[in-house]
Length: 174
Length: 235
Image 1 (cartoon, one colour):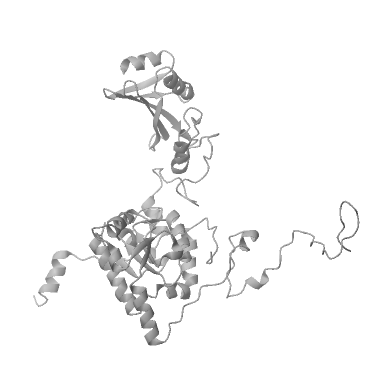
Image 2 (cartoon, rainbow over the protein chains, first blue to last red):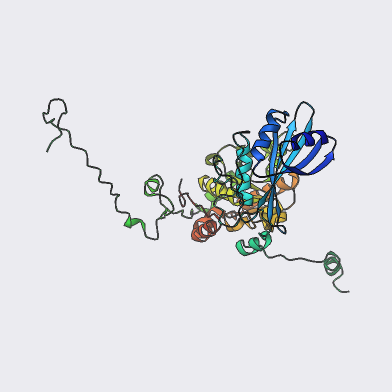
């Protein structure tokens, strides 16, 4: 896959090549070149299948990483393209014109990470969190346990140490 | 003035003119008392689609007759086939050949209108809670709730989840809990047997509890379901 990386690098700015397996490799692309790169990968190098789109929250570096995983059915290889976004202003171009299913992933990323994809159909509709009013839930600065304790009423818990409990139950006189 | 025929211009006899639509809605002040529900989250047009009566507790019949009723109820438990979580997978072995609950007079039903037992199978997210409330209120009385799995009891492994309610008994009344993650089909059947005992003893009064503490249940439901776009009770 290094040859493929070198070939793409003639036209696009790529860095951080990482070959994880013989048929799986990753590279980081520029945000502005992403749509052109994905189109080039799809139409020229026959990476025709969009496996998934996912995001990583790099809180310490103050950025989001979006990974587009592509699959080539001819040589059975996967190529993941990473893009780094500014965490304060997470806006990315939509890929729903390249792969129709991309809009589902983008809708999910918008709900879970708050990453906006302008122009993607239905991107603002809730996917699984109906009526959610809090922050995007998969961001790492959202404390889900704290939110749960504040929002929901928890059943009080009666915990017993098994050893002492059985001792009291079976031999109460000791 | 009578209604004019458009072609001839001759007033037709016996036809009353239609009431002009001024866009004003009828006065709804009479709804704002204690005995009716406001359905305030719905639009004015949608409020006309739903009844606004509150649920009322059912009075038990004369002693022996009520006992006979309870015997009949306990022996024809029809389960609403609505799986809310992973516990729903236990319904399949229950109704199929190995554990065959139809020999106990139970069977799954596809619609709430025909069911009398609601089996909450596992964790309840907010989105599911909305459907649970809707299905539970659509079920016809007498109706009972069996909550299966530890998630329905205290949140289970989702105790720190932002989107899962921890105690289902704060939102709908629960008659029997079955612990376990997952409970075996035998445990679920033991829970149904316990429910039968409760019904025979006349203690499975979740429906009446829901009617008596209706405001409390409704306030709890609306506290977590932020986009409430349903009628308050009647469907």
